[in-house]
Length: 205
Image (cartoon, rainbow, N blue to C red):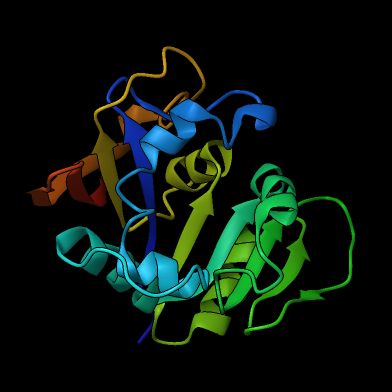
């Protein structure tokens, strides 16, 4: 049985998931946005940052998201930023399908991550589904790629970790969404010390 197609992102209280410029991607605001992830034990272990780290519900959510994901899809903007920032052993450990018109041979990294470069969102998803087997496919980002999948009716579920930080400008999660086609069904709401985790099933109107 095929798994779900989902995305899971951190979002500022005013609706942004990333700064506008890639130069600011590791800046103060973005670090504040992700501050619920960095201290967790699973995150530290997955990126080989050393032992220790916090346990609890935030840690569980990071681990559960990783474990359910059999393959990921991302846009070229996210890949370009990550190619510079990820360690040699990229943190996915599964096939990753990059939506881009730039032709490139698969890029294999230590630890099981292989990046494949695909020309459109439908082909990328078809290949990701096949690679994932009965596990889920995560649309990793960025915002424009997530929006394409939402507007195409290809998302089954998503989770947003709402962080108590304001951006003022940047990449909005749902900028340009075709709201007339999308209905949401609340699945879960969990508040932790640092963020509020919201999960929704996506339905057609």
